[in-house]
Length: 464
Ligand SMILES: Cc1ncc(COP(=O)(O)O)c(C=O)c1O
Ligand SMILES: N[C@@H](CCOP(=O)(O)O)C(=O)O
Image (cartoon, rainbow, N blue to C red):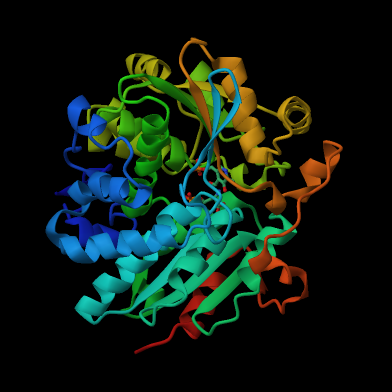
């Protein structure tokens, strides 16, 4: 399978090259030139498969012959054997045709583990084969960071530098990252917000001279392998409740548009999906562009759902590339203008976006109210991101006869503040994390300055 850049100017690559390259050299994001599709019969034949076997079926066409079948199977098996629920991504019924897809049973208690546990293995495999070393630079609003560290820190071929916005992630999230004391892991607390962290990563991909010949790799969802792995659970959720015979809808708490984009791809690949609901917090650019064609950044605010405190959503570009008929020049122009000013989509393209997605923005009060309400109704405790998904699902549901599935993207133990604000008790940390608050932390607080960050990285990488 060939992968092409959304900005049309970077060379096409195979899966392994895309896995290691992260961002395309023209600043675009890699996408498959042609998406694999599955017939309804083929999807139906997967009903009842364990998660790892389903994952292999969905992932294999993307990886092509870059990884041998037995090796790919083994990496997928090991990845999902490390989850602490037999179903890996279990479904919980909240009410009539109202479902929760629990994506927090991986090692770091957020949906990021689904992709990053596999990505770490795939990178290590490719680097071992090539005899190469990669410097990982990642931006996190809290969850990608710990999942990436957990997924990659065991590889002798990787150094990992994770930037998070200083004092803007929850304490549990910060400690999950900063208490991994290894000499290939560095946590940078940036005096800025998530968008600043993410922009620094993208700028560093554009000019890697500071690494003096070493190569940069990505763990964020700009890396295609992240998206690929996240497509699987849309299939597993649907198949668990009557798909593909029965249509289902999804509500997805959204920040960088990676998770919902994976759902969009599942639909393009043949999974019968009725509605895709984009659920945002007050950082609502995605809601504004979908509902009103207003693609203006505005100020990033700190909310009780910090992982979604994002305005510049990387993967929106991948979706726009499709909507603009894979016209890389048009996307290049649109993104160049967006980096400087507010933009509007061409009206026919915007109509298409509105056909594909519903959206809703939920503020902190409504988030806490939803946590409280759902707990009163069901004794089920939502994390704030999932609460935003549930609220949006209830607001946007256009057909109550179709099951609506909200993605539970994190465990509530990671975010005690909104749970307590909702008048509830925060749950206990799981056994493997009980001493989290006693563990030693290692982090460096750096100015929001590209040169400072790049110099820090250059002076700490391990040269082989
Ligand atoms: C808990 C949680 N929910 C939702 C999101 C949003 O996902 P995405 O960025 O893929 O839209 C994130 C981070 O990205 C997250 O950590
Ligand atoms: N919410 C994310 C932000 C980074 O998103 P990614 O999916 O592109 O890695 C986080 O928790 O770090």
